Image 1 (cartoon, helix red, strand yellow):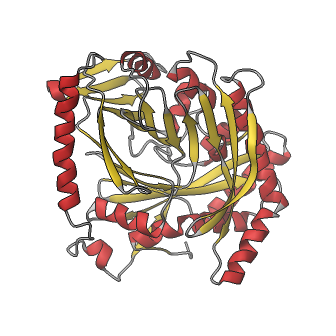
Image 2 (cartoon, rainbow, N blue to C red):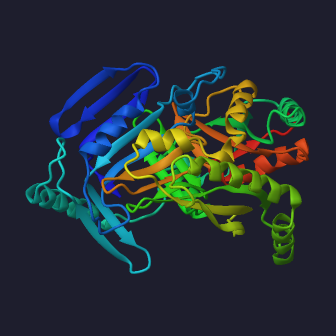
Image 3 (tube, rainbow, N blue to C red):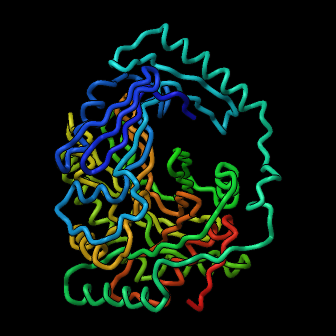
Length: 436
């Protein structure tokens, strides 16, 4: 948990919006096209602290939008930007509360770093006292769902509206398969968006989502202009201060069974599915190539080829790819080499991105981008933004999709997207009219 950032930065294609809370100063910086990441390079050099006692002791926390892809590659721009979500937004935190679920203990940490990148023990102690007061308030506040939040307590449901009709989505899936047989791609991740009106306490909604669908890479970003409620099971990239890098793509999905026997059948079917194993293997190869662009020669390995993973509503297949980074890489060089993640784009990545842009109606925004941190010590941990609700102007948006390969059956792929959205629809009290 972080509090009181000393710098906030929001990137749009042609400008940066900066805010220094402690100085009460705002600034807008015009940019040349495709240069927003230069600012992250500058901050990486300016705000550095070594030998952190925890995996994260402070640094930049925020998200990269999927639509950052247009800054990284020369791509068509066909989708509608109806939500106007930034390309990325990060805030630099020096005061961090660390909680160990194993030891059930809290630690407070601060580097005492200021806006100029200078550290002082006086500033560190001041921030620790502030964190202690905040932590006492959190501990003393009952962690219960507010009964006044009618959206969470009601038994009534609202209708969820799809961005495209089911027949049109099936046609789009067929179009992807046509591209595969034409030799353009091996795989593409096509998605659809759902929306519904929603009013209530967003933190309570996130708490319910986390209880019903606990995930290892969950995140809650309550910005004033929009909110991101993420229950992602997938890690995009983790970087250790030593330069060790890891990515962990997920592909292949089956719903959890209604009984123990049915659940085991679903898991066994997924683990032994030639289609799903091939789908994951394609992405493993793509991720190996991506890491090979930024890793020392011969260090890229696949320690876990294909593993079965269990989640509250679905089964998944996952793999782990690791490597040792080339020394002194800039953040922009890392991001340009690997973003967006291969599991939510396809292979080859650039052609898959072009086909996705052709067929999807709206910009994805945070969905299939990444949420996480870039620490003062060089440690990174970023997820893939899936199983996520984006709240903006009283509307809840949910995107879901899946990897399409040559032997995909469109009807089955459509059903898979609904399996993935099940926990999100349930917590939103939304129902899909499947006659649409």
